[in-house]
Amino acid sequence: MSDYFGAYLAQGTAFAAMLRGAECTLLERAAPFTPPVLDLGCGDGFFSSLLGRPGSFLGLDPDFTVLRRAGQTGIYSSLACASATALPFASSSFGTVIANSVLEHIPDLDTALREIQRVLKPGGRLLITAPNHRFAALLAGAHHCRRAGLNRLAGLYGRWFNWHSSHFHTDDAATWTARLRAAGLVVGNWHYYFPAPAMRAFDRAHYLSLPRLLSRKLTGSWVVAPRLSLNPLYARFWRRWADPSPVDDGGCVFLDARKEIAVV
Image (cartoon, rainbow, N blue to C red; front, side):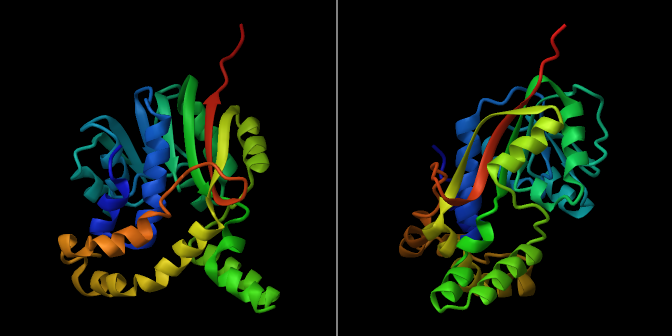
């Protein structure tokens, strides 16, 4: 298995390395992907560059600036600048759609899901990772406020974090299943991941990553010296939380859904 955590830590922040490392592992376990594969909300393409072969995915994102960086990864056969609510593809075009930490950022989620269903081939898969209904409550800031008896402040902290992260949807598995069913997609399996200790570490890592934020502001790069960023003790401290194993109570959800095959 590839070292996804290390790859992200070498070029970014600890909180991104924990979350994206776990998500990469989830998607690797969900492979193989039936082609063609659409990377919905592909961003700069780094995530998919760790998972696929050169030219194996098609990328879509509404931000042309990040698409230019995605084009440099070589992972995409083509790129499209468009919204998930109006996909510029013919019906039944894709065997797999990957939506990695993307759908929670789309206000009109139901329209996006209908569009995804439309472009999927019958039996095609939609793979989703997203924050869930417990995300805000499991953050370190909310946890410490509750321990101090400041329950209202705990709720405010969680809502602020979701607002700052542009999370329009943080739903439980039942709500996701109903949404997907209404769009003609059936959930085959799902599970929660990132339990409370991992969520607290993820939150704290945002504040401990301020030096990298300063580097980003001053140089345009999160990490000026990637090799130095992989200090073994520093990496070991955060790596233990990059685990997507199923848990009963976690802050994120993984769903594997399929487009229904019409019965003639």
